[in-house]
Length: 157
Image (cartoon, rainbow, N blue to C red):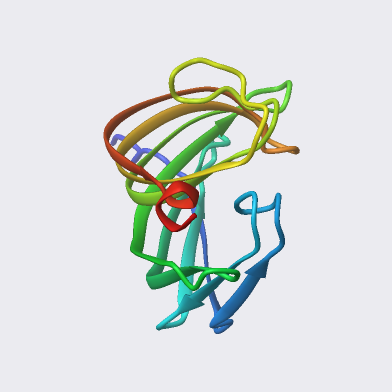
């Protein structure tokens, strides 16, 4: 007789949704000017926590319109992406995201060209990013990207 191998621990999965349809971002938090984001549908996120410590996220925040509050200029995107984060013992996240997502950069973050930013930038990215981020602050230490991107703030300034 041979014993069957023990079943692997199943990942813990949590799905959350958000019915907030309008969000305001003051100057310096989204762009250098005030913006309002309007969502046509509810947003939902599925988080899967694996026994090895990695975390996978599936984000759906479809049909968002980002509006410059001063000028009314608009940018529309369709956020749907998959992300896997691996946080090491020092709190550094080594992750990857693919799909269409927004990456928010703040002063002190390392930008996709390797420079350190002194201002806020919001990119609508369609493709695949690998990154190193301080998990508890969100500071971008490194990011590599393959795909196309649009600087949202420049598009609606």
